[in-house]
Length: 124
Image 1 (tube, rainbow, N blue to C red):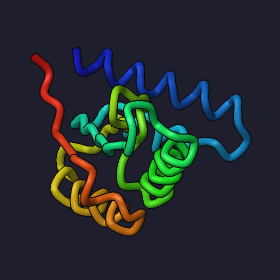
Image 2: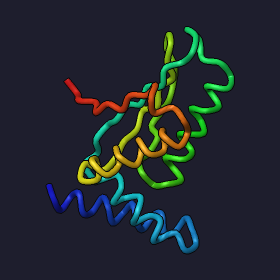
Image 3: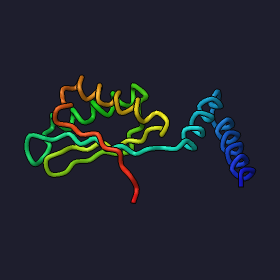
Image 4: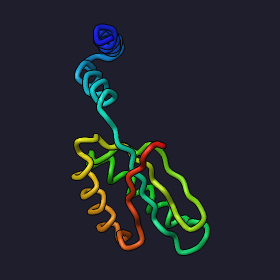
């Protein structure tokens, strides 16, 4: 089984190297990222009304960009519901405590920490 996994990784790397000039390092990083244990996190930011305003959607996107730019987590998707906007993330399992603190710092800087929740999502 391990041999099969190693072969798959090598084939992925070889294919990526052939497609991109200088892409070998990027292919290695991407492959390693895909094999790491991931923890799902969910950020909900309460909105002032039932439906998110354009400014609140813009704020959601700004927070997402800050999280990605800081290499804290990978934004999986986003959305909204009655009274909130949501950002779904994945972080490396080993980096979870540090990532949560960095996410809270980003939310604090954006001025929404007092109306935001950061939850660890468990699969049931």
